[in-house]
Length: 178
Image 1 (spheres, rainbow, N blue to C red):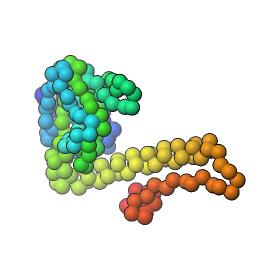
Image 2: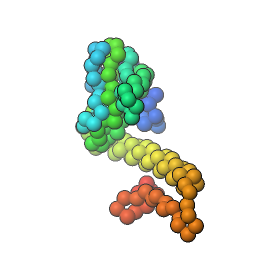
Image 3: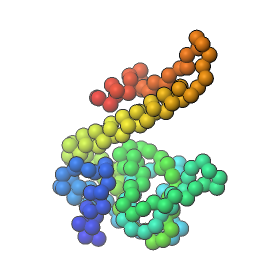
C-alpha cells in the first residue's frame, strides 16, 4: 500500500490532528497492514490491547452493550478502534468482527512509544489530547451528577452527596494541568 494511502486516513483521525506531516508519515511507516476475512475477530472485549486498528476498508460490526442479545453496531471505514490501547495498557472495550473483507492499519503501542521517545513533541501532543478528553469526560460527569442531584428527592436537612473526581487526593483540574 503506497504511503499516501496510509497517511490520508490517519489525517482524518482527531487524535492525530495538529501533528506535523513528518510525524504523520513516521506513524504511517510504523503501522502494520492487516487483512481480516468475514467472521474474523479484530478485537475482543476485555482482552488486553496492544494497539489501535484504523479501518481502511470493509464492513465491521462492534458487538457489545447491555442489551440482550448484544447490539451490533456498524463501524465505518476511517474509524479508529482501541485508541487508548495504542497509548497505554488497556483492555479493548468492544468486540469487533469483520462482516466482509477488511483492510486495517494497526498502530502498535510499542512502535508509537518508540516514536515518542525519539520525538518528545509527539508525546506532548498525545498528553494534551488525553487531558482534553479527560476534561470533557469530567464535564459530562458533572452534568450527569447535577441532573441526578436536581431530580433526587431529598429530605430537609439531608443534602445529597456530590461526587468529586480525584486521584491521589488531587482534584481532577490539578491532574489535568500537570
